[in-house]
Length: 361
Ligand SMILES: [Zn+2]
Image (cartoon, rainbow, N blue to C red; front, side, top):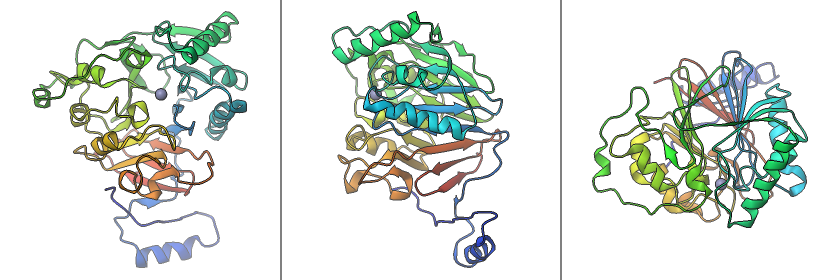
């Protein structure tokens, strides 16, 4: 179960601030990790986990002013997902998205791109190469729309392969998977033999765009953040067996919205994240079996969820403080992670207006 902490609602400058502070000192253990959001963001990396109802849209804004959006959510819905992305971009003070990374050509990842570029300028779109799944109609449709945007020169296109470094200002981003291939050699500091591989369950090769997901490791100061899109368990095995090519991760953007076709035990036991953030929807992702594997991974301090998972029910959801959108009418609340170069970070829930701090390790 997640570790629970007490709430603080510190609002520096507000009338009740000093009174609340005193009350906190009297009644709250000093070790509490809950607080209002930190104010010092000048040298921080900000990552917004936009609620796109079981798709992905994750916006990185670097201290150098660079921006990287991983995926664009769904098409349709009157531009709901693009509107939510633009709203957090405004909060972060950016008027243009430098780079949009499309993990793969499924409609919950690339579907929102036409609506996004109609609302905010985009510099370059990074992809794994052409769509390879020609039998799935929604996939063919979003691929067609992508080609039309390219023909209209709405952005530049950059296709990358494992081992490439992404040209993002202010962070180091390395491609670890693309178009069905993974890095040949371990990343710096990684490569240890993985004892967990011996008796690990083997998985059949995925036949969709999912296994072609463009996965990246972002390094910022001492922190390592992993995003693999919807990369499936067969490819996870290639990344961590027989040697762990990735090493340990601090922040894991949960693959595939927390669906069971990703998130194998051998993988989670290799990357051992401190914090996992799951971009599930109310009825998409957050499979109980995958949730258990993530939640029980040996070093995990907290799992955060964009939504309460209806499938998970009482036994397979985190405490409400760690959920941006609980049961009931959907408000599109986001989570925001702020990271500092010393390795400390915090996660802010826009619904509760509270943040939880994590010290540098
Ligand atoms: Zn997906």
